[in-house]
Amino acid sequence: MSHRTASWLAWTMCALSVAFTALSLLLALNLSNPDTHIYDFCLENSVVPLSFSIIGAIIASRLPTNP
Image (cartoon, rainbow, N blue to C red; front, top):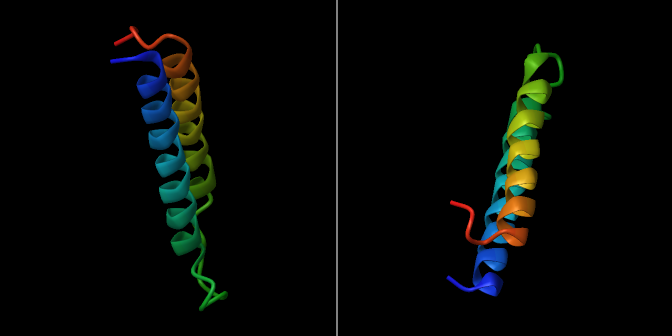
């Protein structure tokens, strides 16, 4: 795989991860019924996958031979 292809693929997967995480947070907020209880750990559990995907994209784009 070329360096450009690996970088493009890594950042595309990172963008998809960010988009799906934002969608899941939007669904978890349940804006149509504001009186319901929102779980406190939803936001905390979303930070970890986002940080992993961003760090993974940085590593994969800089070091395309890294498995």
